[in-house]
Amino acid sequence: MGSFVFLTPSRCGNKHLEELFRYFLKLSSPYAKIEVIHFGEEKVRDESPSMIEKALGKESERIKKHLKEDDRVFLLSEKGKVASTEVWSKEMSSWMQHPGRVVFVLGSARGLHKSLFDDPKNKAIAIGSMTLQHELALVVWSEQLYRLLTLEVGKRYHY
Image 1 (tube, rainbow, N blue to C red):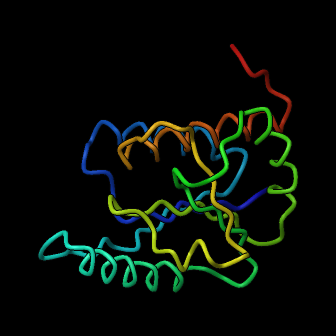
Image 2: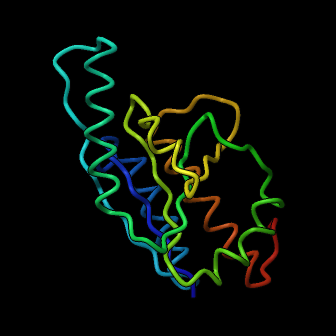
């Protein structure tokens, strides 16, 4: 059984999106151990580039404190690799066999610090080429993880 972590800035502020997120986590629970960790979004006084950089740096340090040496880390970002469900499904077998955790990092509304992208152990992945609200992206990826987990155990793709 694989072990997955959603590392996010905070709980969904929208109760409907939070319910959907929890729904897909519950559906996924028979197939994998899934943990949700909130690292805390950094507050800023203004949206100046220097303040944003400083905030992202602090968030990055908090994210790194939650990562373990043997984690396989995926950064959910519009800068990442876009792939179909079928392509991700082929990678799922290696994710399920990975001895450590598979961690999906979702940044705050300001994104993720470049130091996370510079780490060669981290891989950036994208849900698609559209820009989505971060909480909605979390719901979409949790649904995709559920779909990938069910495909891994031989369930049909479409019902």
